[in-house]
Length: 376
Image (cartoon, rainbow, N blue to C red; front, side):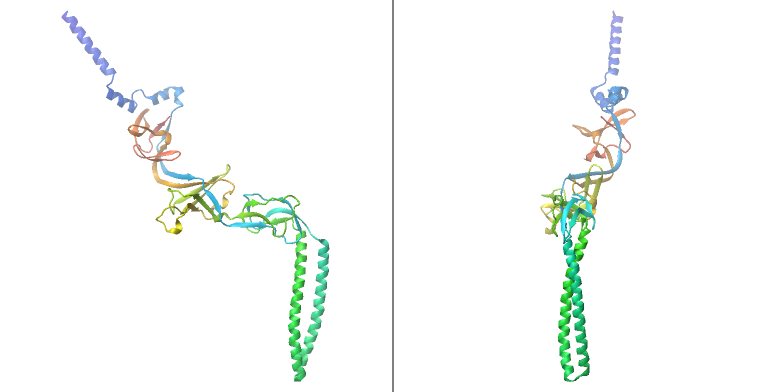
């Protein structure tokens, strides 16, 4: 009987020792779960094809980390240029526009096609009038110059006749100079009208008198008459553009760098500038405004004025920052952590986060460059 009891006691002791070896304590279980040595989901993912696609790893890297304040501003153009009909004579009839809103024009580039009708009878009449006036002026000049020469010869003889000749010479010279001037002005006017009509006859386009973007074109029907110096459209110079955020922003301060971005689906354009006015009351009154204003100089010349722009102001800039994808960072009651792949096992490492942008999280402390983090 005694031997039987001893055998039962030994058997119970053996069972206890076996259970102690198989079932860990609660403290050991928590540590094992966090270190990945027990019930490791990552290892399961690698061995289970159905779950494997849910997991991937990313390498901790160093680079430039930035956080931007982003908004859609208003674009104002202060320097407007006007397109108008520069043909002063003839019946200028609209045919069609050769440009469109948002197009860039250089001086002399065509704005629209036109058909100019001139008075052929008036051209013939002007030709006759010009020739008639030239002949009359020539005859008048010849007669006056003959008399002036005669008076000058008498004056050279001296005496009382010479003095009288001097008076007649001076009076005729004044009248002659004024008459020649008046007649020449009349002829020049007729010639200018004639040249204008002749030039208008061959005009087929109205062209830009300045360079810039077309922001507006007036409406014309084909065959409609465009009066001389009639307004046609509006252009603007992008180097005079101001980027404004109405009401301002507390994120902005004078001198802060900014980036303007435009993506029209084909091309992405960028320009660097700075804040030139803000809400900061410590600034001089001339720099304080109800709107935050940005200056980009002439860097907007390549931007399409018909497309929206996005303003990005860098609030955080850090070089050689440790970064991981945002999806790699988790948190619990103890704080932020990442799951690091160490020899095929996931290890939870708590980290200090410096900030996050749309893609990455800046890690100040807790992991090292080259670590492999697990993302689900």
